[in-house]
Image 1 (tube, rainbow, N blue to C red):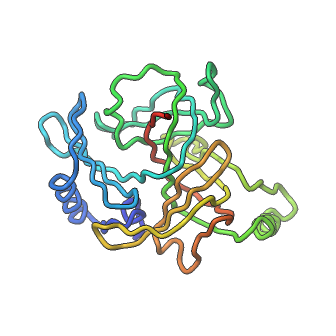
Image 2: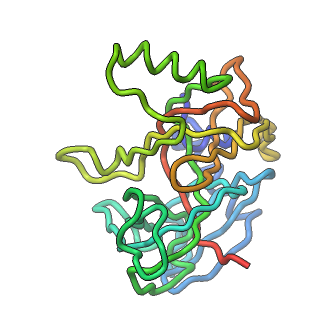
Length: 252
């Protein structure tokens, strides 16, 4: 079964696999002390990472994957969402893509993203403008060789209705009626770079693509089974649904 761990090539299908990964991360990762406990960051090669969470008593309370890549977005962070099931080391930000200095609470669109390292940043004053390295873990994925193929597909599906442009972004996690908001999105963009990446821990390959969409550049990662026999290439149009994980970065 494809999940966020297998998206980065980690072998994880159940609780036993999760515990093995957590133990490996604890023994081989780099500890990062924070006000509420600690993270242990395991780098598995090519940008694939696990972030193990430890409370103040050094007890493991969670673990999340992240991909560190070349994508960058300037966003306005308007506030923080505290989920019912979240622990003290979890974090979710409410952000605006394309926000400008002095106007962090507006932009091209609003969206949510989860952070694997929320407590690293300590107390933050919002709203604020920050740069974010955003990775998108593919749930569904369709790839087109060129704009003509993409528009042809759109016309077939729309039956004469609305045809979406090649750079679009929909915050599906904010559109879900009745449920808790989620860090999910559906977007389309142009592939700037792409390739296979090997998870050095498992030996499994996964696909990566740097995608330019409305609002900035995002690192897209996908389980090799989701991509199938269709490789992603520079210049392709990529469209799909995703979970969003991000880290704040300092621009030099």
